[in-house]
Image 1 (spheres, rainbow, N blue to C red):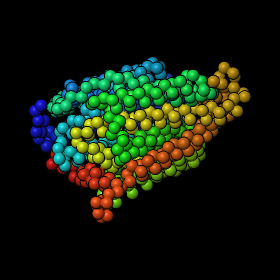
Image 2 (tube, one colour):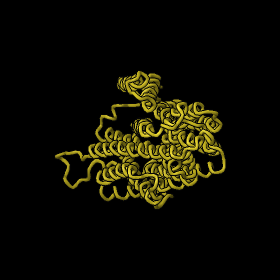
Image 3 (cartoon, one colour):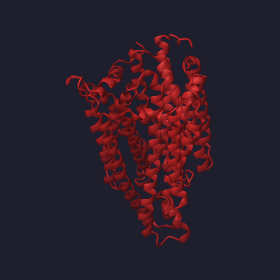
Image 4 (cartoon, one colour):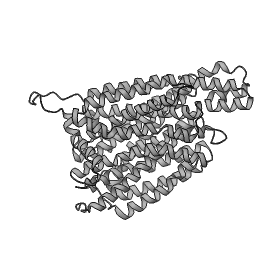
Length: 537
């Protein structure tokens, strides 16, 4: 294989800009959907989707994204990362068009799964092209700058969704992806060489089928649990047990492979394995609390989509501020004393959702969201840098696949579990208020607070709508406690993973291993914050 072409600094910066647009597209889509959930649940303005269908509309994207991402990396090695990235963008754009004009919740779920396929092809190629384009200190700086697209997407998504929903139909939030895809495709074709890996990894059909079927079965069982009265039903315990068995088989197959696309052996390392487990649990909690927040602001509090989008800005601002702030603090105090307290603060801020109700002033809600975004930003950026830096460069691709898959899997299960807890508790809490509701409408009232409000309006029973709101708030409070517990477990796991390695040969004054590993990334992030022109130097 020939060496990668030497690119001018201007072309490197142009390529980085295009890659950031691709990454922005993925994050924009995630945050746009969170503001759209309440509208999709509306039987008049949306699709009348049930909580389970909304869980699938959110989870189908993440499920396919998580399980195909490591395979997409192997495809890039075989056919060129630019080719795979361009195909992913095309699929993402076509699927966005499909989602925009979906006639029912089933079509939307299928379109979202197709969007997940496109995203799975985009993300590994994006990262690989970044690594091939930049070398030396410029590589760390480029990684640091590219990570800011996450914060931009988080900040722009809710506002964009609110603006579109205030003037157009719900499908516009997906249709807006199409022009962004066109711009990104043009940049990829015109600017990016078709880099190929010197070592072509074989495709992994067994791993693909086992990971998708296992995670899908587990997710289905968890979501189904929120729709039935007894978990002992075969369509609940069967898929959950089957999903666990299939995922165990997936790990076994990958361990037996000579060149696995997803290498579980990397998780045996205390720092890499523990750090990824902690971040997966954190993303579990973030996904669940975000799912609740969408229904709280627009449903229970009655905010318009635009107001709800603006109300979510503190989360994004906190994340954007948290990443560079975390870099500065880690450079001064090392990773463990910064990341562990920040993760604990994130857990407590998620638990604080349990104190929000129908009469909470907006200022208090904004404070909670700001703390959530800030604390998560303080954790994710430096820990990600440490995890990637803890592996040799020739294992960075495999490590990136493991890291991203673990986090996306955590998000999928977080949505499933969080939504299921909400459904179970809501149904039990609203049941005593159904005495005056006709028998043929009781099931609809028990599906969700959104459905209950429409039934209450049709029956001219405002007390029923109030009871549904109270039942939802109660379910949100119960869910917040469980989410906080999961995030606190993540804190304990991270504290263990980042524990300094004891060695008699190492002087006491030497920085711990985590600080040594993350130092180049942190320095790059700090320098990029103050001088973006250093890319490529």
